[in-house]
Amino acid sequence: MKLKKRKIKYAAIFFLCWLTFLVILVNGILKFQTLVDIFGSYALVEVSLWLLVLLPTVAVYLFTKE
Image 1: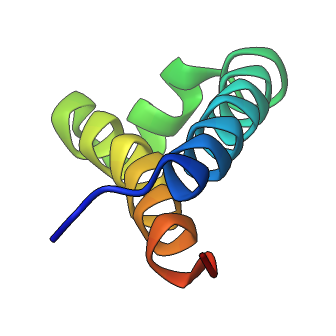
Image 2: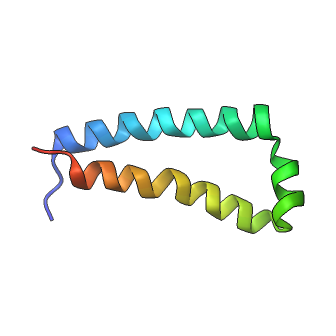
Image 3: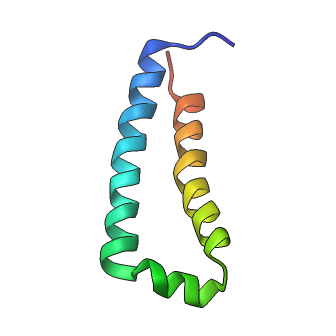
């Protein structure tokens, strides 16, 4: 699979915006410790937050037209 510059650019922009939004949401509004208390596991919350960032970024890369 050959990487395309345009697709990488759009995926990177999406990654930065989405990561910033989630950081503001989790640290500012929901409070990370509250999420850990609800789900009961630090690792579970951490992995789920990373998947919430990485999976949509990969989807943006795959579905961006050349």
